[in-house]
Length: 380
Image (cartoon, rainbow, N blue to C red):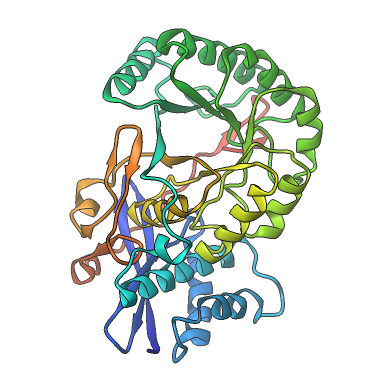
């Protein structure tokens, strides 16, 4: 079997662009992967053009070998944008391998260790209408969701005052805990918005409400900053969605600086790399909480990883694709309130009507531009 080409598909997804990669072979078997970085898709597309030159004519079953070639062939180690391109190709290669053998990918990763994967859902950003937001929390719990995720607050005019964000987020978290009770797990995503003084105070002020974890409380450029935060709070910490390789995760894992590794299969160089990150995390009793604000392809690849890894806590599920995109998928993972269902579909368990998908050329949405009250740029 030989690789004959790569095709990039961009599909509409709630005002954004879902970027998929199809890898074709001379035996008619194709695989699908997804790019996890949506904000700079042109940069990733350029990386995919370079990777295609390396891959056409190669044996797609040599997955580890091809990963090494893609990551290292340019001499400079792959950064996060090239890692996102590698991720899509790598997942597609695993999809091809599973389809060729007639087995789901988790069977190739060591076999199933659980019957389904617990999942959490996003409450949304409607916290300015507080009663409506709290009612949505009640409704999601009534549907069967046992893990709820929401973000720190900012003003409606895209102004983020760190002190006001701190006060409002502490109030919101305690209100949600009082609303849903003690049995529901709550996840607070700081989204790298805060500097250490506010992050430390926020974590300490919500400790009594027992968060499942606080996600990305600090920016990711300097993982050593988590050492300071770790020493000053008792809340479980989660990070890693912006990391593109095991080397970036290494510092957080080996320093025992996090409790949950937020591996994104569309960013962290694919299933080949994610399995290694999971093994590294297991040696430190750190669990996976796979990141997926993306589409069905990443949901499917995350499911395959999580079915095969013993140290898994929860899988992210933001929302189902919009009807236009959803109708293009001929098979995709089944998500029910609280979990992603087991799948025995060969490959990663997802496929698409490619002829119909080619009709769309979606454009990635520009991310929000948050600023501080004095007009300075700050993280979204």
